[in-house]
Length: 86
Image 1 (cartoon, rainbow, N blue to C red):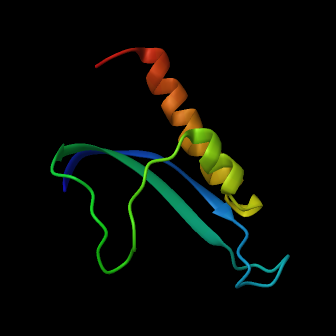
Image 2 (cartoon, rainbow, N blue to C red; image 1 turned 30 degrees about the vertical axis):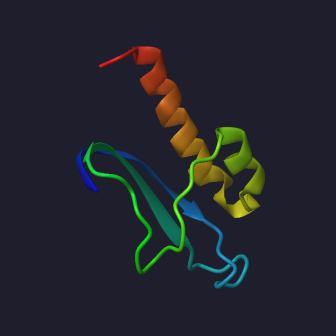
């Protein structure tokens, strides 16, 4: 799959079970979106399966620590939706 037109959505620090709670080390997660130019997504060496899910299903399966990342994603798409079609 070929993607392009990358756009930075945002960055947020998230708590991570691999680091002590309240410690100075945390994980910074950065979110980008891109347009699919051609091809289809496919599983490879880093993922077993590709699937589509309704947003509600994704939100229900998230661990609490990923809530700030999910908020970045939802806020981005809400803004895009309010702008209308390209």
